[in-house]
Amino acid sequence: MKIKKLKSISPFEVILIVFLTLLAIITIYPFYNVLITSIANTKSIAEHTPYLLPYVVDWTGYKTIMDDIYFYKALGVTVFITAVGTAVNMLLSVSGAYVLSKKDLIGRKVILWLVLFTMLFNGGLVPTYLVVKDYGLVNSVWSMILPCAISTYYMIIMKNYFMSLPPSLIEAAKIDGANEFTILLKVILPISLPFMATFALFYSVERWNEWWNALLYINQKSLMPLQMYLREVLINFNAQLAAQAQAILGSGNKVYMQSVQMATIVVATLPILCVYPFVQKHFVKGVMVGSVKE
Image (tube, rainbow, N blue to C red; front, top):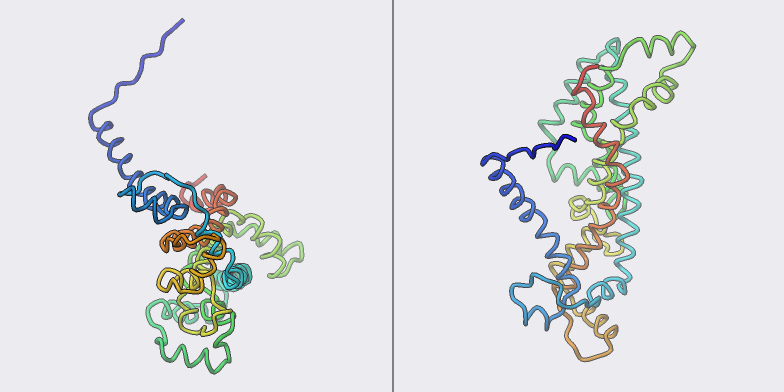
């Protein structure tokens, strides 16, 4: 029986492993700190500095957030923006990219130049606000969807991908009597699912983290998305939330403000993190498209 020799590790590999381990710790620690702080209280934080281990488990921060009606409203707005916004993003991006991938399109170069122009210049903050206001979208969830309904950068990448597909697929479909809509729906999209899933993930993350348009166009607290709610909690931990937490505790203990803030961060981040394991295989396939020729 042959005994396999252990491969010797060079000094460079040792240094590399140590460096990557330290880099991983530095990267993971902020998330770990947010998590353990969200279940801490004032006493444990005061007794243990720096706070490196979860010495206590206190769910007051999460109870305070869950007892706030505006949290559920913000969550519902964000879910709507993510679902509908991603669908609008993918619909416009895919259809626009497919049309621009047609070399026989009349005025294709002019349209491409106009599309690329928007990547370099925009109308400006004030004119954009006036346009949104004139359309009656201020204090509407659609103000967080329509102004960013398409990403020029993503559409250009999709266009290049569609142009890289074998022309014989489209020609065969046309011979069978399929029109352009049928070709896109039943030929192009089924073989492009990993690629499409990658951009759907990008769009959904952007929509979930939406706050800029909400900051500009939303004045009603009931229409604020989750990220704006998080901003309000981080900046203004108001007396109302503190009073709710006191009622939950049913005692004279003080509420640790930072635990509520960190709990809000965890609640706002966790749902979108749960999506990644289900789309990871599509994401890996999508980023590898075109990197290896068969």
